[in-house]
Image (cartoon, rainbow, N blue to C red):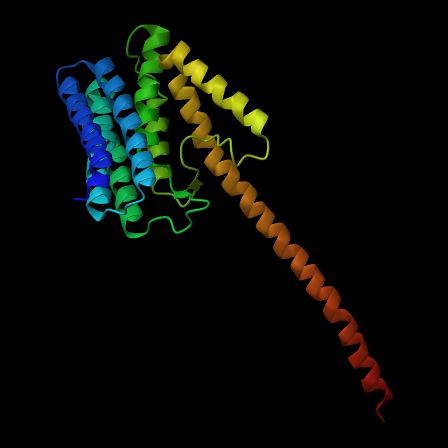
Length: 262
């Protein structure tokens, strides 16, 4: 292990520790504490990526360690959270539904390991990143508890869990977190305003703001994907019209030549 990769790997180990700690709290029925520990693990996960990029030292060991830590903190922990807190009374159906975030997350990590991003300039994730799925689930738990003072058996769980699980294995591209980048943005003032307002909202009341911010991030991916496909379709149609316009004069010329021939 190289010296430069020590700090990113230690941060990854911290991510794994908080994920393990969250699981212990889940087994004790302390679901709110477990949610906050998952949030801390997600922060450390983002930090270890930043440290690894700053070190500029590729480490296969670090990549594998990060995947295993993510599987525990953002796969196992959220799955156990929704099962013990919400889905356990539903028997086998609840068990299978709680298994979906873990299954989708593990598939997402395995796909990323064998096919990492090839564009360092504009790196896009294929499918919803697993930390975002975990933040959405834990953030929704905190959001409901803040509004109602208790864990509410809301039907939204039965749509949210399959949705984030499918998005993780989908081909929809997502930008890396944070969503707002200032130095490369076309509208730097707007980017700064959005970034500062998001940070202020999280500081003001993180329990009420994590889930809405994650939902905005989740919606941005399919929206950009749809707009990209729409532009490609329009571009293909325009190219088809141009090629047809180029072919028509040639056809007319051929017809004239044939008519003049005896």
